[in-house]
Length: 453
Image (tube, rainbow, N blue to C red; front, side, top):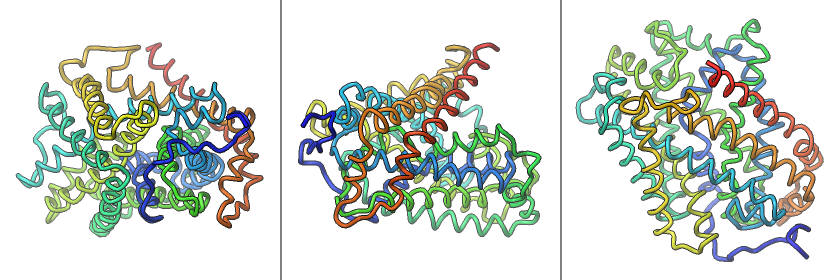
C-alpha cells in the first residue's frame, strides 16, 4: 500500500520511548504550561467576563483543543516520525503542514528564550540581592545584558534536550510537581492579603456586559496557543508514546492540568495585584514590573519573589525544551544527525536569531518590519500566520484527503476504546476547521490594523 492509503510507517524503528505514563503526561503538560498560562489566561478571563470567559474556554477546549491534540498525538505515535515526515506519510503534499509546525516552533523559541533570559535575570537578582533589578525598562533596553541571559537560558534548555527523552522526562518529573507546590504556596499567601477578594472577583464574577464576540474570539485563540497546537510538539512527543497508552485519556489529562494551572496562576497573581491597587491589565510588565512591587511591600516578599520566579522559570524551560525537541527530532529523522550535533547546531542558530529580538527594546527599537519591532514581528509571524494556517491545512489533509479512520485504528489498540470517535471525526472535518478559520481571520485583521497605523 502507498503512504496515501494510510499504511502504518515504522520510521527508523529506534525512537526513544517515555519510561512511564506519568513522565509523558508531565512532559506534555509542561510543554503546554508556559508564560501565557501565568499571566495572559487570567488577564483575559478577568477582562472578558470572568466565569463566562472560562465557560467559553472550556467549551472550545472540547471542540477545538482536544480534537487537534488527539489528531496530532495519534499521528505521531502511528508514524513514529517528526512532524514533517509524519504528514508526508499522510500525503506527499501534506508535508507543508509539518514544515509550518517545525518552523513555528523554531521561531517561537528564538524569542521565547529572550523572555526566559529575563526570568533568569530576575531569579538570580532575588537569589543574590533579595530584590528585583532596579528598572525593567532599563534592563531590556541594555545592549548586552539581555543577550547574555538569553544565551544562558538557551544553554540550559539545550542541556536538558541533549539527554533526549530521558532528560526531558526527568526534568519534567521534578519541575512540574515543584511548579505545582510553589504555585500553591503563592496562592495561599496571595488570597490572605487584605483586599484579595477583589482579585478573585476580577476573575470569577459573571460580568456578562464584558462578554462579547471579542471575548469568544479571545477564548478561541487562547485554546489554540495554550495547548501548543500545530507547533509539532504533540506529534513529536506522541512519536515516543507506547502503544498501550490511551491517547484520548492522555489528552484530557493534559488539557485539565493545563487549565487548572492557568486558573491557579490567576488566583496567585490577581488577589495580590488588587490588594495593592495596582494595574492588572498588563502583559509581561505585570510579571517584571508590577509583581516585584507587590513582593517588595509584603512581609517575606523576597522569599516569595524568589519562589515565584523559580516557578515561572520551570514553566518557561519545560515549554522551551519541547519547542527545541521539535526541530531536533526533525533533523535526526531527516538527515540522521546524532542528537548532540542536532542540539548544538539548532541551539546556536536559535541564539543568533534571538539576538535581534533581545535588542528590540534597545539599540534596535527603531528598526521596524510592517510597523512591528523585530520581537513583535516574529511573534506575529508565528501566532497569526504559521500556526492557524497550519491548523486549517491539518484539518483538510487529515479529515478529507486521508481517512480519519486510520487514526481511530491507531488509537484503538491494546484494548483501548475510543467512544467519541464519531464526534471526533465530525469535529476534525467540520467544527475545528471553522474555529481555526476564525482565529486565522482574526489574526490577519490584527496584522492589517498594525500595518495601517
